[in-house]
Image (cartoon, rainbow, N blue to C red):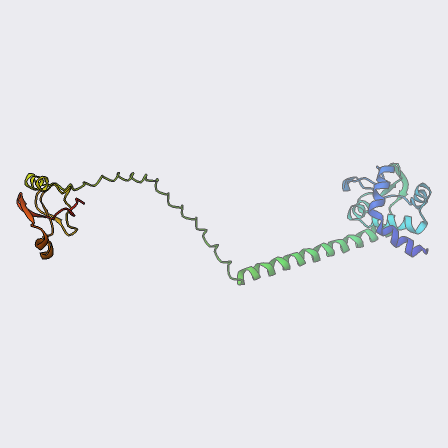
Length: 237
């Protein structure tokens, strides 16, 4: 690999390399910006300690010295320190101060540009929000109506027991019974067309003319309604 490629690779790995340097020489590579001091040339010591190539070691140190805290330390302190953090006889020359001042100007210009970009983005965002219509109001969420309470079950009334129907009894008057006894022809048969009259009377069908010719007929009146009684063929229903 060439020195240029090693330097580039060391610059890319510088932030991981700072942890190694800080663990090995905490006073020469402090974490706090206020404790940073100008360093003497320590390229050879880094190569020997970590086996780095000259280009790789210069790439790591170049990023460390380009930081804002280091440039301010170059302008603030006249002497340089070693890896142990102690002052040495090496002084900070004018060329180093000029380079530090130029680097600080670059850092300031970069910060100003970044601030301007952020301000422009904020202004554009505010303008877009002012032009854009407000978002629609959220629709109210309607709560579901409670279901109507089911009515309490009503016990159906028990069906009334069916009343027994009154049976109509057919009765024969005493006169009719006497007539039947005289004939001695058994129980008289009532006509199918007989009907119950008022009270307890029963009207029998009158005998036909042919029956009257064969034998005499007997009729009896019982109660308020008449009953016709036929001969030996009559039976009660």
